Length: 317
Image (tube, rainbow, N blue to C red; front, side, top):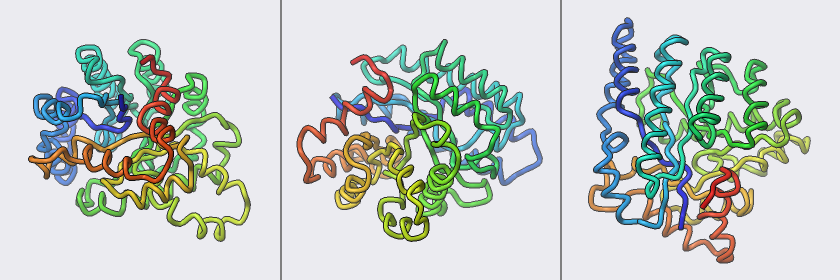
């Protein structure tokens, strides 16, 4: 068995509600941005997703919602409603298809911390979701903001992780920013967290990065030089990181050398890779081949594929 901790889905009802709210505004750029994302049916077409999943029946998916942040387009009350709708839809999918989906990750209305904390409690305590997703910035606000302290405390209390996902402003072309800009945004957020008060105050806080820590493993020595104090470098090794590098074994080995097998989780970014590769398995097959080619012990590959996710997400498998 394998557990893919970073697969994407955008629940249809919540996505449509967000689009309706945005169309009521006066920002045509934002509306166009959402309409373009809504056209990517691989993230909301269940039949298409199952066709790709059938090629890898030993892989269970954890459902996460990627871009866009609801708070970028909706006020606090609408963002709260849309987050609740999305989390309910994700939970229903997990309950309906337990042989496909082993868990889901909550989104929160991050433009109102009290509403975010309320939905965090509901999503985890009532719906049984396996953690929450945060973006690398929140309406331009960095993740060392003091107002996030109670959320970090809550996630430590629940002993569940935060999924960290990069984002871009709506005026930036999605493909352009996603190619390289997202990796910079993730790396910058990681350094912000690692050099701040966050891990000092919450040493047990668990954060999962996308794309194996992005630029951090490659630029480890430069980071050591720019941050000669041990705190930042040591804290960067506290992050958990997925394998969504689209089949690059050398990059996986670089990440492995940086953080070790205990901090790597199988994650692929599917079904996004399936958008362009109709006759292939998308990022799933590329990622599995790349991990299988890693020159590491078989027991460490088992940690990456399964054991780390079971432990980190408190799963019963």
